[in-house]
Amino acid sequence: VCENTRACGFCAGRCGYHKGKMATRRPIMLGYQAAGAAPLLRGRPVENPETIATAIRIGNPVSWPLAVAAQQESGGWFDECTDQEILRVQKLLAQTEGVFCEPASAISLAGALKDLERGKIGEGSTIVCTLTGHGLKDPDTAIAQSTKPLTVDAERGQIESVILRHLDAG
Image (cartoon, rainbow, N blue to C red; front, side, top):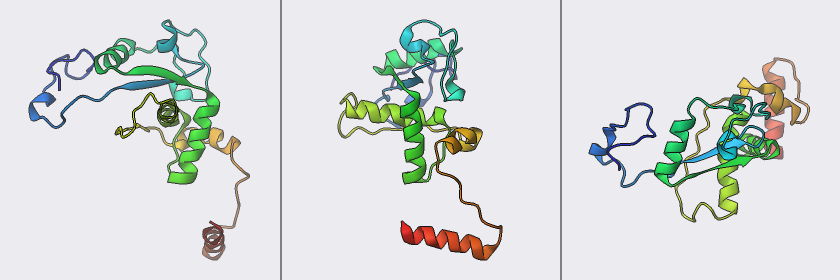
């Protein structure tokens, strides 16, 4: 692990974590941006960024130099995902893992899955995807791509019945 790093915004390039040897090597840092708001990929600010992932709808990120330093120092890369790819993974996470994240968080897994399919991420790699935003930060997007919600009276018997019916069907 490196003693100094330009990519760290917390230690001003004088990282103390290397002394504990908690890891044998630094991670490879990958950054995924929404296709409609991808200044790091375009190499210039995006004047009118547009994406369903509102939390990453940023055309000129303040942390641009730190992101580029992390990518370069780690041997990583940047890539982009379309809104459709982001929404597909948001739904996949909710349906298969019970994780309800906002679209901006789903992009980390959407990008990793894309890179796995293309062989850019090697077989047997340990992958960590950061999902920091809960889906309730943007419930309208999730509702728009879902089936009509089931409505029942707020009575224990009715709620139990619906839950049991769906458990038996699954």
